[in-house]
Length: 112
Image 1 (cartoon, rainbow, N blue to C red):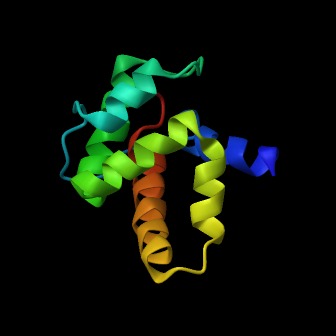
Image 2: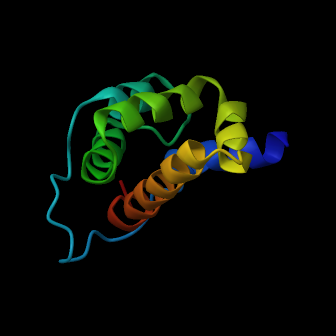
């Protein structure tokens, strides 16, 4: 269970790969709740550029309330696992949006 939670957090920070191809018309650097949580984390891979890129992906895929919910995963990775495994429709819908955000982050933030 800890391993899965750790992988989710790594997907947020270290796993943000991808080239940001021409199909993305988002700001490559942004500030907001995800960026702040990323910069405050203890991950070695964090940097202003990476965290700003992750925030830009969040701005494209997540509402403000979704972003505030996702920020909680930085301090409580187990919460992400609980949401992912939840049977509640609200949680499933959020997880679909969150997964799209993670996928976008992985594609557009490689090498930062």
